[in-house]
Amino acid sequence: MKVREYIKDNPDVTITKVKVLGKDDVTVEEALDMHIIMSSHNNPEDSSIVELTVC
Image 1 (cartoon, rainbow, N blue to C red):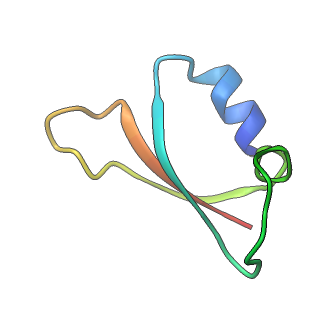
Image 2 (image 1 turned 180 degrees about the vertical axis):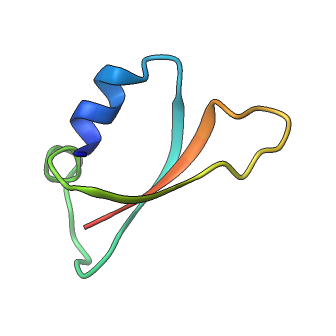
């Protein structure tokens, strides 16, 4: 699933961080079209806060 689709399907989720594998300089627009390989819920009190790893 791409980041753009994830946001559309999960409007109540707050993405706090996006880690991009294999690239250093990525624009937000480029990141929106990347594929999610992992999502992490690092806040045990609020499962709506996630970090995404994309490529």
